[in-house]
Amino acid sequence: AAYINILPTIDQMKLSAPLFFDDSIYDYAAGSDLRPSLIRNKRKAEDLFVAFSLNKDIMKVLGPQVMQMDNFFWAYAIINSRSIWWNGKRHLVPLLDLVNCMELQNSAGDKTSVHKTFLDQSKHAVTKASTNFTKGDQLFENYGQPNYVYYMYHGFTLGDENSHDCARLGGLAITSSDRGAVNLKETQRKLSN
Image 1 (tube, rainbow, N blue to C red):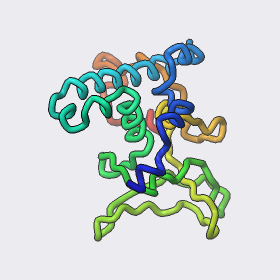
Image 2 (image 1 turned 180 degrees about the horizontal axis):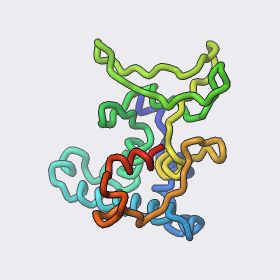
Image 3 (image 1 turned 120 degrees about the vertical axis):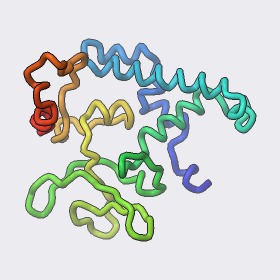
C-alpha cells in the first residue's frame, strides 16, 4: 500500500497524462503523426475498459464502484508510464520507476548510455547509474526514447535535449517488391543506426 500511496493520483494524472485529455486537446497536434497516435492509444484504452467492465469475474472482484473509466485509465497510464523492461517483458519495480529521465554527460563529456535493467543471481532488478551522482543528488537515467513516446505515455518531452528523438511518419512500410526487402535484416540494421 505504501507504494500505491506515492504514485500520482487520478487528479494529478489528468493534468499531465494525454490519455486523460479531451480529444479536442489532441487538435493542437493536428498535421502531425502524433495526433492519430494519441487518439489510437486512447481508443485502445477505452476498448480495454469496455472489455474489462464486461468481464463478470473482474466485476465480481472489483465491483462497479472501482471499475470506473477514470480508475482504469489511471491503472493503464501507470503501467505504461512506470514499467521497467527487461528480457522483452514489462515489470513494475517500486522505487526504480521513480527515477526520472534526463540525458546527462559522463565524466568524458559524452552522452550517457540508455539505462539497462537485468536480474542478478538473487533475482533482484539491477539498474546501474550511467554516470556518477553525489550523495543526496536526484538520480536520473536516459530512457532512450523519442519525444513522442515520452509525451504519449509520460506527459513530458526532453525538447531539443533528446539525442533519441526522431520524426514519426505514419504509413511507411517496406513491401516485398521494394529493393530494400531483398535483405530485410540488413535494411533494418541500416535504418536503426
